[in-house]
Amino acid sequence: MQFIQLRNIHYCYPDQYLSTLAGIDLVIAEGEKIALIGTNGSGKTTLLRIILQDLEPTQGEILYPGDKPIIAFLPQDIRLGTEGCVRDFLLSLQADKYKIIRAIERLSATRDLSLQQATDLASLWYEYHAQNLADWEKEVNSILAGMDLLSMAERECESLSGGESTRLQLAALLLKKPDILILDEPTNHLDMQHIMWLENWLNSYSGAVLYVSHDKKFIDNTATKIADLRAGKLQIRMGNYSSFSRDKADLQQHQLIQYRERQKLIGNLQQAAQKRRSWAHSFQPETRSEGRGAVYESVYNAARTQMQQARNIERRIHMLKERYPVERPKFDLERKLEFAKVQQSSRVLINISAMGFAYDDLWIFRDFYFELSGSERLWLSGANGCGKTTLLKLITAELIPQEGQISYAPRLRIAYYRQDLKLLDQTQAVSDYLLNSGKDETHVHNLMGCIGLKDSLAREQMGSLSWGEQAKVQILGILLGDYNLLLLDEPTNHLDMRSRDMLAEALEQYHGAVIFVSHDRAFIQKIATRELCL
Image (cartoon, rainbow, N blue to C red; front, side, top):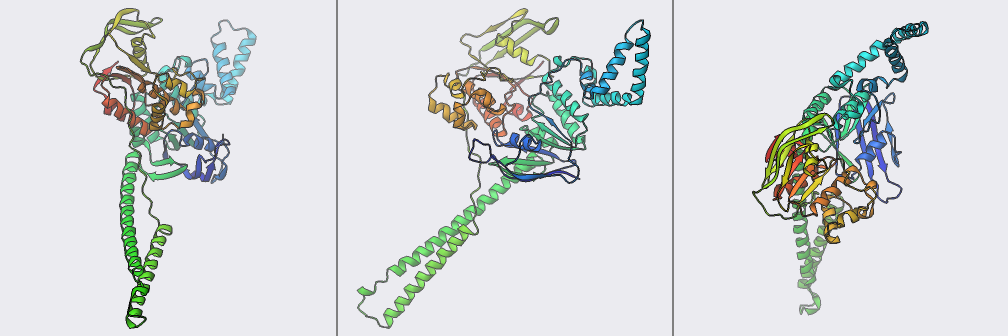
């Protein structure tokens, strides 16, 4: 059964001349797992907002084959903003039922009930059974188990990590029994274990799913259809990302062969037409002594024939160009990012000895030893909450260990990329932030274009940018500096695929040291030279 159909969807923002979406057609059917891909700023979020009816399309329509489907949305930036434990958060999604359950729990825990309290408790139990609230509690517990959250059911929501919050929010969405799940970068805050858990869960989920992701491995393992948004147009391909990439490459190669053959044909035809025109124009009757006899007529007719043939050939060329055009395939521009040149060295850059660190009474590190040397690219692995970000903050001295010490090599210059983007002043203009490096404006604008940031964004404040655009600005800030140690905390979050590849290629050529946290398997495989599991 078809759940939703988008037909000829156009959208143009009021302050823009060009349409962000230009003729989008998309069908979302039961059981499909559709990966929506495209560069940062291509219009993916705009399309999601139209499907969610947060935006009205400029043109086009959304059709439903039957009843309007229930759509549930998981955003990139998950802020639960709630007090209480995990189970209570889910139970409270049906407020009337939760009120009865909480009242029963409160009165049941009271010693020496008064007559009125006992009467109230009996009345509440009657309502509990009349409304089948046991089924609601059973459903919540089942969802908790399915989301791998049962063990933390009594934990406070405020204490959850980003990945745990993602799973809790997903559990809340499932309790709504949606027909269509829309997920915006669902793997951003998940550790490796729970990314693979999400892959298995999506593959077993019977409903329709439309998700935005730039994680190639995740898309490969889950997608049944690829929707590639470029220049306002949507290109649909069945299969996962690998098959899409192969098909795209094969199609581009076929188009290139066709284009070259067509250009060769047109070139040959143009030469033939020119040859005939030249011969015809070379016939000059006034220079000939024969007069207007048989010889003249013969040559004249031949010249006329040649000229007519030239015109026929030129008409054929025009027809080929106008009626049966073959466009040159558009390949991604070969652009490169480069970090500042630093001298390759084998010296020890950081030494951590007998370090201990705790949040309140919870020890994250105890008697911890670590050494980083040379131009290592060290991957910090481990589950959410194991201390990866904490270690980066300890190295930058944002946090101070309670035990042991951290020593640094002389002239060590450290750059820190934060996954929460809190190093960026949301009121600061992009150009002001990037020009603080001391680099000239031309160089800054060239790098912006290289990573896919429009020149017009230079005058914008950070707070007006998308997550992906802010991530690119923070990366450029590091590129423009002179650092010999990079600390990168989930640097590929929010980045499109091309930007991820460019960052990985730049890090491969970087001669300084790198310590990075990532759950992007393709990125890890490409750049990691050593793993430290916490």
